[in-house]
Image (cartoon, rainbow, N blue to C red; front, top):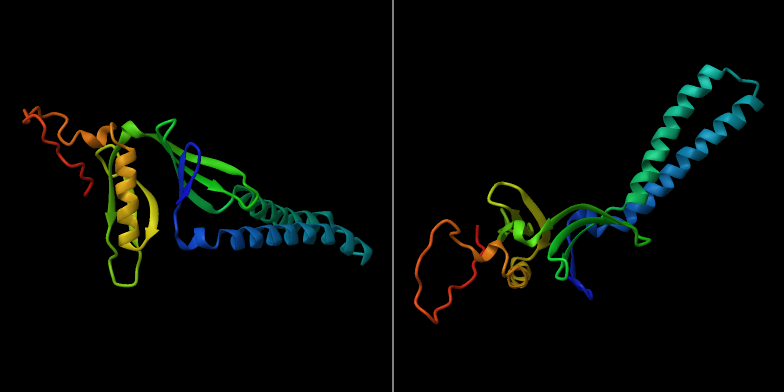
Length: 190
């Protein structure tokens, strides 16, 4: 978790996020290599006396599309982050690249959040996962992966920051009278 002036950023912590820089470099290298191969086809083959336009267009078109796709993926980035914006009161799921370019994949207002919970690891040695549930359905956003103790602390922080949103309304359809001075703890277990 990294603090900012407007909130904080949580990096997902999955295998792709841990190796995002390496994946991005590999995509750039692969894309540029394929585009270079296209240029080599058009330069070398005519010099060797082989100039069949149909035979050059098909492979160079395929290589160019694959090269451009890899360059596009590298530009898009592989680092998955969830930004908790306390000023705008929203969660943003983003992808960023090594040069700081950022693409917002999804934005959810705090009021749309139904719960925040930690899903325990299925087997020992696997990471636990922190999720945000949007609404009351099965729409889940994976915020982070890691040790359960660390994610529980992050869950408590997010619950505190989301106070005032729908998380505080445990039973929105049911009106009950409480004694004055007693506070009900904010729980987010699902």
